[in-house]
Image (cartoon, rainbow over all chains, first blue to last red):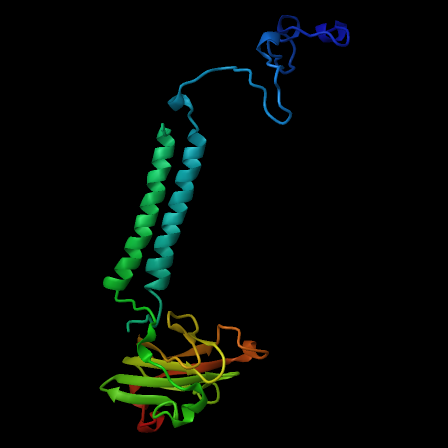
Length: 93
Length: 171
């Protein structure tokens, strides 16, 4: 039997009892859960890990934007120089 | 304000794209010589086009060696000339289209090419193009002009120099 099933309803299960064993999601430390002044619809404000401004590293977003910009650049060159300037009967006057 | 290093990268990229767009369009105007349609064609009275020296007898006029003017009237729902009989111009020549409308706003588009302008009653649109090899183009109206707009179309024939003859020009 697991520790969770032994706990009675309404009890706070501490990480030491269940977080270290089993495959379930880790349970936050009860002290870190800020349940005072909680606004419905907002996230909890318990800070899990503090990082510096430039330590946030969304490299996937950077790669995605680089791919988008490359596609836009290639399409622009193709549309303007190949399809438009290379087309018949350009207006020259 | 602190801006993240990645944001600086894609802000610079976005600015570079805008500068690139403007630079290529500027090159098209200055380097490649692409012109915009403007109001140089002047104005006419759409109610009395038949009294106009050229629109009174629309068609192809020779204005110089290998230079031709084509006067076209767009009206519901045909081009004159273009629909009843094709517009004919000789190959390897410089052609200036003078297009106006006798009734409502029409479009004048040589299909699949960059030659394209609005035909506005009272206003003459002039576009100059260079035609090369003998071929045949379609013409169509690309501004909704009424119930039979979808059927408003015509033909532009680029005739080989050897087959070109005086009867194909009005003058």
